[in-house]
Length: 141
Image (cartoon, rainbow, N blue to C red):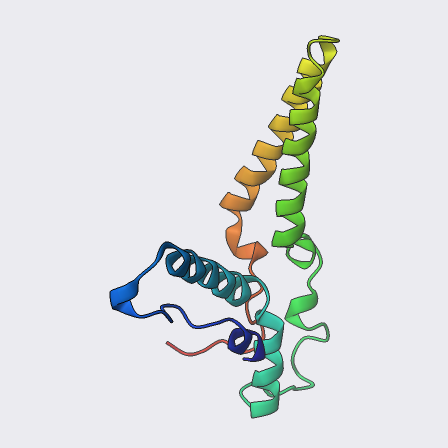
């Protein structure tokens, strides 16, 4: 995969000369690989499966491809959910700073924090929906 080639390999520095910067770089590279594997590569893997013949398009199959199902699975996006949670926490922090001027900001802060926690709990409970996994070819186990 081209994206994974662009992410440097972990543990590039000499094992005897392990530095804190090398450990931090390895951690960053591991996080980048995890993100790319779980949230960006599903559609690309579907395209590779089509080109290699692992999935054969047939008239007898459903008219709509499985990746275009209606509902939550079609809209679920981890980067969007993460940005909404962080935005909610940001607004909660801004409201907390305004509490000394007006007490209603405490209520606003509680509402923003509750929305952020509820959305984070939903993403945690329905985590498989937010992964961009291949949807065409199901490998046999």
